Length: 141
Image 1 (cartoon, rainbow, N blue to C red):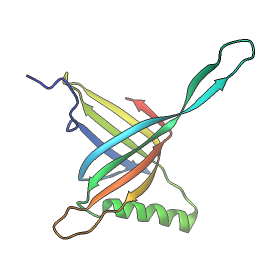
Image 2: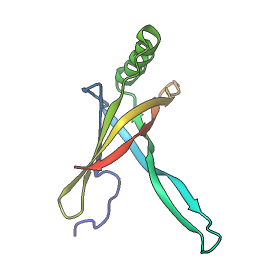
Image 3: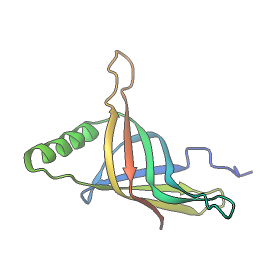
Image 4: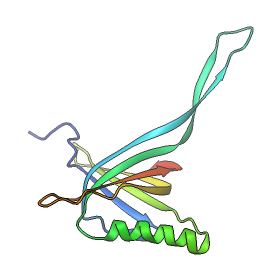
């Protein structure tokens, strides 16, 4: 019997920065959450009205460090800013293999990155890195 639920291993994440694919060998976790701004009106002659307007997406992914690719990217982002005042942006693609055999593809655009953890280096331990991101928008492709 096929598994009727997403169990985590059915997700792949790809990062493009300034149009170039970054090879992150072992992405071990991914999460994203929509951000909204609450809008509220409290009319004197009616009940309160509240609704949300989209305000981007925030998330993170975890990587077992298999190369210097992520460290090199963050160094390049910093150098571009300090040397030329350039702030680049990227795109994150999330591919989810659905239980019915189809694939859902989500595109996070206008991405900015933060290396929230460059990892802890200890003997006989895999270095685990965490990348935080903000995206202006998420689209279903």
